[in-house]
Length: 567
Image 1 (cartoon, rainbow, N blue to C red):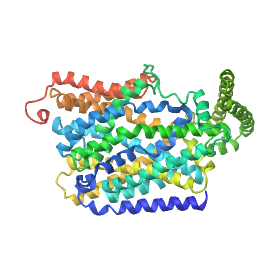
Image 2 (spheres, rainbow, N blue to C red):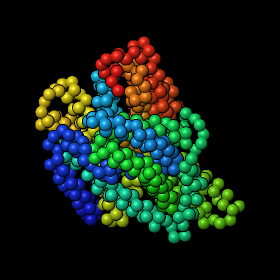
Image 3 (cartoon, helix red, strand yellow):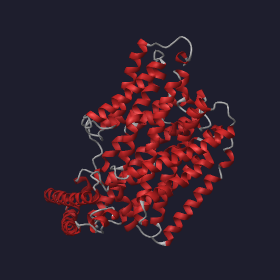
């Protein structure tokens, strides 16, 4: 990489660290450290929420998803606007008026301490796992660029972020998020422009999208109702609705964001920002992935996007077979490139049908060769789960963007990673201290003591996430990995809050048993019906908790006094 690119990245990191450290002054008490003294404007909270979501996984995993699948993934977010409306009139006023630090504090007021503790523990486990996948995305990039060991790159990303989060608390997280969001959007737009400019002179943007459309990548809607397909209109609208309700309404990493707002109205406005802008932003990211696919139609891509695995195969006993496969790949690429050029520049309708058939056949032939190359990697490494979808976008950035723009885009990816990691670590520390340490271990300590414990907790979760990150990179598309982790827990957690807010008949025992029943039901479906898409796990978990919780509440009803009767 050119020294100019390194200078841009170094300048960005210095700027962000300076911003984060500058906000440590307001973090001397737990109200300021965890909630920023509830003083943040709606637009800052909204940008922080979006920055938390728009992690490096989005920039690496979602672009890879667009490269392989096209726009289908956007259906995942169809339930988001409806979820924001529901939460704006339920969860936001509810939590603001309750004056809580965490969403799970309310569960003890409504039910009992065991329900609060179990729900908090599930959040810690699910969010700790997800935070690890967020670290793994930029680690992939640095391991490619620098040729460093993956463990080293994970630690270089996770540990510094944990340190500045330990120092500054939620105010440092929020205001660095705001600046990072500007860097992220600028980087995405710059890449999109570079991809359009990089098309062959005789291929227009419309021509390029027509070729992509021939492969199905421009199809954004699938109206089939099936539990086996992950990305359909109905799975996104229904399963996505339950997932988004849980994520934004019950997940501390999001609830804590709008608890920092100056008022209930400003917290609501921050949620509407996501409702309006999340889907268009996801379309932009997916379109970048599609444009990378189109770019590699006319410019030969590597047969394997991960040079580390390529090097291992070339140095193995299968090196000769790999060289033979490379020759086949080059021939298949040349055939596909010619077919793509013919399809893009053909105006006659009848000739276009024949050109499309030829192109699709050549594209299938190239995929077959790439599958053979993947099999060679699996044979050499022994890793049968290997996929290189997460390496597509980083490879394009580092090999085809001009000097300077590489540094900007890598800074944007670093910005996305740091904003999400910091937000998650801050939420994990808050839940650890408020729902466990202060509630169960030492309830009467001074703020200085809780601040010290909070910083220790932040460091612990940073190390935990780094360990998870080492195993996340080979689990497939990172954007799918993080949502699979979340969907295993989110529905059941949502079900507990549905019981709490929707009916007074639910008892603490009912909620606790219902939560365990919902988790057991999701686990059973995941094991015995793996063909059912993970998005439906959110619906299954939530409804399972509600049904089991209400049935148990009939046998063990809420008492007329105590927490079960509290609303």
